[in-house]
Length: 489
Image (cartoon, rainbow, N blue to C red; front, side):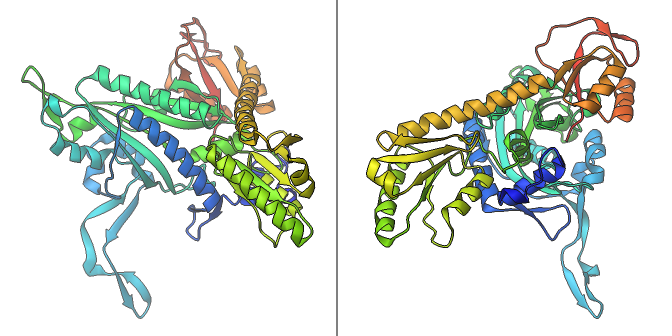
């Protein structure tokens, strides 16, 4: 199984795709740039979705659903928004096909009165709806999230990281004051960061995007940035303070407590299946996928080992008893009793699929009351007692979760460099990559120059850092603080 995986040091991009294939996470679709998410990949997304959905609801949000199709005129109402998405939009122009001698064509008589956009994001259609829902301060806040698919017509695609159609959640909230909206924006950023660190075991940097990197139509964009094993950054989630831009575009006003009319204040925030790509590239190795236990669809697999029918009966009975005890303790476990595959093949399969714990059970284990326990992250094996096995496994899963986070944190720290010289920055960027904390003069010109010359971008302005006077090594102009530069996915 692992022989089919290209080593990371040989070709990191191919390694990533090989891991996805070996773990049976996704396949390419017949439609260029789209993907089929296989059961292993979708089960992981379901677990991510379940935990994030719980966190959203714990902060007062409700789920709703809005249409896939957006009237083209809606997108044109907010100037920055349409500029940001115009080149990525899929457009529906006709409502049916017609069979001709030359084959299927759009029926000329079915041309739509107005083109429809397949949603790249839902701000416009949601704010058109909010206009009908909001009249008074009593109608606020509105805290809505939707789980959906979106389409952005990307030219260069890669499974999970960037596809033309992808799954995500998008929160859209409406507030009476700017302060409430900003508080919401920051709250949801913290939710994303907590999820990334506590469930995905990925340490992230919270920060603000520069004006040139903001979401189209936002006043401020907050983000969480993660560092991958190859020294490239990945944006894992964004939360946007939209000000009153969309409320003004769609004329969404409310009567205040003082009986005056004011435009509503807005936020939006989202994460997508690209987080699966982040998880793969943060934790996996040359043997395949490595999953953090809190999200793994299967946390432990029991592989029975036997030769005779008599042994088979005894081993399977004990395996099922152990599985029942583990499930009763809240663990996600399965027994692989398939007859067509040898134990060694199963070991390699579950290794490639990233199952955190593998339990091998043979006749001798049944007789001795033991089981062989193997960790996916380190490969360590040990013989443990069947007595108290649920507690043993639960504790070990938490150890693995913490170990994965610490390994990723240590890597990020090793790949974070404070630099005050532009030539040094360029050299180290090519040699090892990573985050570079460097002074920035605050101008778009300097930001664009670095991107043009090095392909590195300002990933974020870290939140909570102290103001620090310095000199931008690129322009030689004064700077009030450092930003994080990196090459990124």
